[in-house]
Amino acid sequence: MPRIAVIPGDGIGREVITEGLRLLHALNRWHGLDLHFEELDLGADRYLRDGTTMPPGLFDRFRAEFQAIFLGALGDPRVPSNVHAKDILLGSRFELDLYINLRPIQLLDSRYCPLKDTEPSQVDMVVFRENTEGLYTGIGGQFKRGTDDEVALETEMNTRKGVERIIRAAFAYARQSGRKSVCMSDKANAMRHGHDLWQRVFKQVQAEYPEIEAFHLYVDVLAMEMVRKPSRFSVIVTNNLFGDIVTDLGAQIQGGIGLAASGNIHPGRVSLFEPVHGSAPDIAGKGIANPLATFLSAGMMLSHLGHSGLEARLRDAVQFCLNRGYVTPELGGKSRTHEVTDAALTFLENQ
Ligand code: ATP
Image (tube, rainbow, N blue to C red; front, side, top):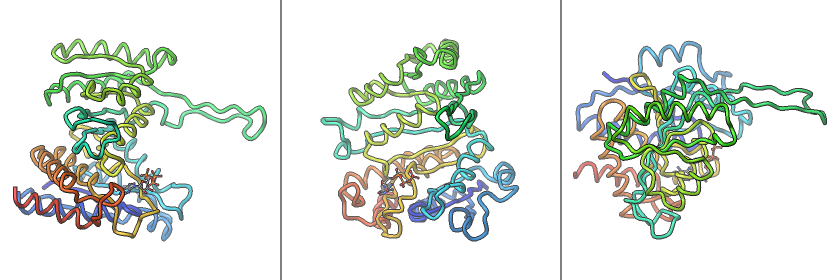
């Protein structure tokens, strides 16, 4: 029985997870998936109530008892340090060694693309962002803080093991899904030590995948090319910082942050799936949060659990909502959050 830990979290996270669960419960029933959900009381309210961010032993429970974690969003103006988000989300990435941040960038309806004359067939890429090292490990330090002589160091960590496993994951995915190319992006012309390692490992791994076109772009060129000609890209693999940035660029190309889904994955182990957007305090409680990124993230989670056919059906349901205009106000629509779900459920029930 696959077990899923649910962390609705804060703000619109709670609203979109409620809707995501409506779809998941329906699919569970219709397809006899036998999914078991356990909702966890974590987030800003819990932290403000008893000071808990991550209860002791919970990471062990995740590893031992669960196949997936379904997360809404974390962030609350009452917790300016954001310590609970750091402990829960960054904690999970590192503690559970979720080394793949998987971010599909797919245009499902050209009306929502800010690039002119762009068709859905021209935007269909998947970014493999390294998720456990790079510039986000906190290695570094401050010297003479607050003085005119202050020095601040932030060290980028690249391990051979870490670089190799994310590059391998990108190629393995390309082969398994029949995608034509893998683009590796770095800044080896300016960051000559760490990114030289990326270059060497990329060359080594690409030799094992002769049927897949492998090419390299510096990250500044990648950013330009994603806008100029997104159809050049099929699979992109890059480090933690660059991946963070180019996936947000990609989110806009596919129609905005309300459509961007993500997986934090360690193949074969418990992995975490979440919409990319934050808790959006400005619209929380108004019933107008876009749940589509959550539906797409739920689809990625079902794929992780072995139901890739259902991921495709959820994507079709999202496309249906977009095509028929069942969209929330930030996309120019009039639908409320639960009405988008109603439309998706009707579509799924009738297919
Ligand atoms: P964080 O600082 O954690 O990223 P945030 O929610 O303020 O949190 P974003 O996720 O970047 O930041 O969202 C920016 C704005 O985009 C939000 O304030 C909200 O107005 C809008 N937005 C984000 N997600 C959605 C959504 N699912 N539906 C509708 N609007 C959204």
